[in-house]
Amino acid sequence: MERSQTKELIEEVINELKKQSFMDIGDKKERDKVLESAGEILKTTDKIIKSYIRVSRDGGEIECIPAYRIQHNDISGFYKGGIRFSEEVSESEVENLAILMTLKNALHGLPFGGAKGGVHVNPRKYTERELNLISKKYVQRFALNLGPTQDIPAPDLGTDEKIIDWMVGEYKTINPGQAYIGSFTGKSVENNGARGRRESTGIGTFLSYFYLLNEWFADKKENIPVEYKERSKQWRTFEKLYEKFKEADPVEIAVQGFGNVGSVAALEAYNCSEVKHSVTAVSDQFVTLINKEGLNIEKLAAYEKENKGLPKTTQHLKEANLEAEIKKPEDLLTFHTDVLIFAAIEDQVTKENMQDIKADILVEGANAPVSVEADLFLQNKGKVIVPDILANAGGVHVSYLEWKQSRVTELYSKDQILQEMGSQMKETLKKVYDEYFKSTEHTMRFTCYSIALRRLITLLYRHGKLF
Ligand code: NAD
Image (cartoon, rainbow, N blue to C red):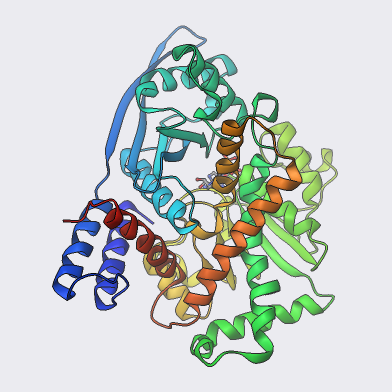
């Protein structure tokens, strides 16, 4: 889903809000004016900073790499959002991701605004020394705009706790004597990071699907409220899948992307003790691995950790003592499965391939993998699409706890962190599912945007910004 589609959806929600009277102020004319001002503010990005990072490669040549920090909106708190290292990074991609962060934080009631960073590099092509230099220079370029009460980055695609630790080190050097621990989240535990942060997005992504069937649907299925019956196609999808919860037949899962988010979501499914799941397909940038009987995800995760990628050849599979068929990366999307978890990059399901998607439930662990057209098309076929700003918020929930613990200088235990994240996520999941299933007109993404925008507009109004 591209930047223009995100902005169009914001506008659609604002137009819908004009038909309701969610704010108890003035007459219709005044309410419309307030909503229009809010729409203009939220479709406009506060600050776009572009710079170039010059790196001396190990071979001696100098490279000049575009880098961005984009701050979309901070009405609900300090700017917050990850930094990605990827060759796909562009200004419009980073801006779109910054807008999604504003909406995600508002949807989940977290006290942060939205920002995102990006560096146009493929980290696999750089040595450790070169990556260290790129990370430190990123902080040097954007230092004036970063900080624990200004803009707090975290890891994203292509970055990890090691890179974040280097960035914190540089931030501390640039700002001697100032509070620095809360300047980044996603740090290693040894460097004041939150226990469980690395796993949190993958755990939350799996939870958003599992909670939907195992708790939300289970609670409603015996006595379906009349208003929910309107979504009869989706309801039948749930009934079909829920049958599997009670049978020996496992629920089949396919996961696109096997990094921080994908490998953990796959492990959650693999180790789920309440309901039997079988992860039958996983992919990364180079390969899809399929085993209809279920892949050994523990072995694959160990292999990925050691080799920074999935086994790509039969020789690799043999060495790792794993059984799987090898296919092309794009084959995963159209694979027969019950649940498809996205954990890679944007724009994976569009009008070009939406007819070929076979999964019943699609979960956006990645940001923006499904386009607006595909979302609506798949929903009309009875599929359920759990959108990014709902599904992948586990990481920012834990980032909030990491930032909070930097202010109280006390470390929470991993259990405390994951329990808190789980119960906060479930609160939002319930709110969204309750509202979504009551109406037939909109996608779940629309419902999420509507809840988020209602919060942002209320804050803008309370702060006296809407005249
Ligand atoms: P990562 O770099 O750890 O892993 C990305 C994975 O995707 C790798 O396995 C890579 O090989 C694979 N990949 C890349 N291109 C692919 C393609 N074309 N087909 C199949 N696989 C491909 O990144 P991550 O941190 O796991 O992030 C994954 C997604 O989740 C991103 O969209 C990111 O924005 C989103 N996300 C991450 C976090 C977080 O906490 N890490 C939080 C929220 C959202």
